[in-house]
Structure formats: structure tokens, C-alpha cells
Length: 159
Length: 147
Image (cartoon, rainbow over all chains, first blue to last red; front, side, top):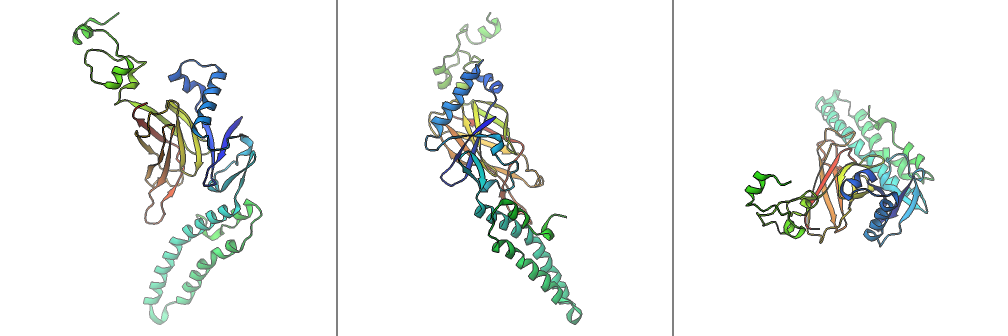
């Protein structure tokens, strides 16, 4: 099977998924395969004249959507814009870190209220670890999507 | 064969409304027929129920020829018959996204064109999770206006 794909002004990739012939026939009446294909292609050409519509194989579309907004169309293959993918992963790390930092802020206050018995340095060290947790990915110059995927810290994964 | 009670109720006139009469929507002496009833201005002109996750797919629809997957929570709904202008209305709703099922989602409108409408699906966030554009397994859209 094939799909129509195109790159928008923003650089994002759109992939077209047509209605089935059976559903279209509920309002258009009986159609031949040729009529159905022509209706779909005429409509796309008329709707998106500003774009270069490309026919791609289903196998050229990544199997997962994890970095969907980083997809880019290279000829008839969908690859990843690694800069965008890195930014997406950094954003996910920061989002996952946020509640943990808030929890450590709470722990710090508790230790602070203990006075001299409080263990603020331990909490401070944990907070520093979290603050620095994006550094490896920031420093990474990725050559493939898997490196970015693997850069998500284990301690931030959902329990 | 005309139904006598129906014929009497509409003053003995059993004429079917033309498309123009359906679009004008003022006559009380003609009746609508299945093939033209969608021309009434109060009638939805298109609707679509689709799965917006993974390989997106139209589950059921009327007058929707295809969808574009533009990215996370970002879709074009392409009408089969165009609207006569971009002055039409689109409504939509969606199921809470997988992995964030406890978060309410909102369907927003990005672009209205005579040929298609671009919609965005976003979760609304809560105290711990930020709002974000998300795919949803059930997205429903309908459109009203002149074609």
C-alpha cells in the first residue's frame, strides 16, 4: 500500500489517509475502483496545489509516533530531523523532572525545619543531580534517533 | 405512493423540494427527500469519526474524503464536496488521549478552508502535567454551512 505525503511550510510532514471506498459509497453511490482513486487524487491536487505531493510506501513511515513532530520527508522516505527530535526529548525530560524537583523542594523544607538535625546537603545533592540531568543530551551530537531515545534518564522513567 | 395523511397535512401538495428550496428553507408546502435533505442550511454537511492514533483511520463519515496526519494532535479533515466559502462552522470533541486518559482534551480549530479544516487536539493539563497536543483514539468532527 502507498500513501500521499507532503512537507508543509513549517517543515512538518503530512500524511494523507483516505476514506475507504465503502464509506465513500454511502454518499456517492456505487463507484468503480478507478472512479474512487480519481476522486481522491483530484481532491488532493486541488486542495494542496502549493505542495509537492509524494507517493510513499507504508514501510517508509516510522512504526511509532514517539518523535512524530520531528519527521522529515527525504525523497520517498520519512527520516528524523535530529535537532527537532533532540528538542522534543529535552522537553520531555524537563517535564518529567518538574514534579520530582517540586518534591525535593518539599523535602528540603522539612529538613530545614529540623534545624541542626536536618540533612539539607543530601537533598541539595539530589536537586543538583536533577538540574544537571539534561546535560548529557544537550552535549550530544546525535547521528541517529536511537541515541536520542536512549538519552532519556532511567531515573525519570515512570515507575 | 403518497401517504394520504401526510399529503393532507401539507395541503395536498406532494411535490418534493428542489435543492434551491431546501437551501432557502422557507417553504412549508413541499417535502424533503433523502437525496436532497442535506442541502437544508440547518443540516450538517459533513461529519467524521476517526481514530487519530498510529495509522489514523476514518471509522465512519459523511462527505469526508480523507484525513491528513500533520503531527501530534494535528489533523486536516478534507471534505469531499467543498464549502462555498470559508464562512462555515466546525465542531469537534475527542476522547482523553492514551496515557493521559484522566486529562480532559479539547478540539481546536486552526485553519478553515473551503476544501478542508485543520484541527488540533490537546489535553488541558493539570497540576502536574502540562497541556500538550496529543493523538486521540476517538475524534469526532462535524461541519455546518453552505456548499
